[in-house]
Length: 60
Image 1 (cartoon, rainbow, N blue to C red):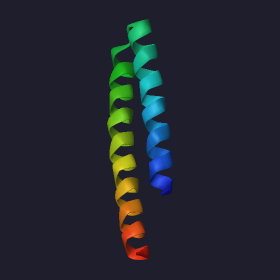
Image 2 (cartoon, helix red, strand yellow):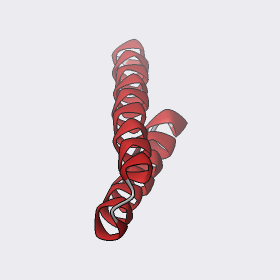
Image 3 (cartoon, rainbow, N blue to C red):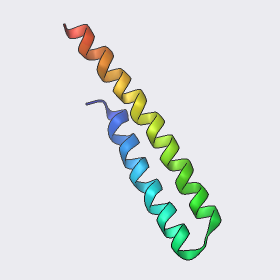
Image 4 (cartoon, rainbow, N blue to C red):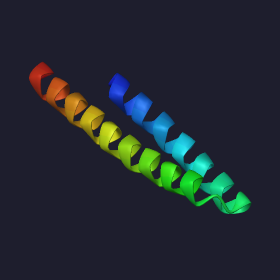
């Protein structure tokens, strides 16, 4: 498993937490930061998945 997948997943979890806390407290900036972290995490996770796929195809 590529390190980008792990880091990306962690960013997504952090983003969800920020979004939920921002919504609970009425903090629009925190909600926006959470959405940005979620998007960034998804992208990084996808990059990690690509790296895994390339690595696996080279092993065959």
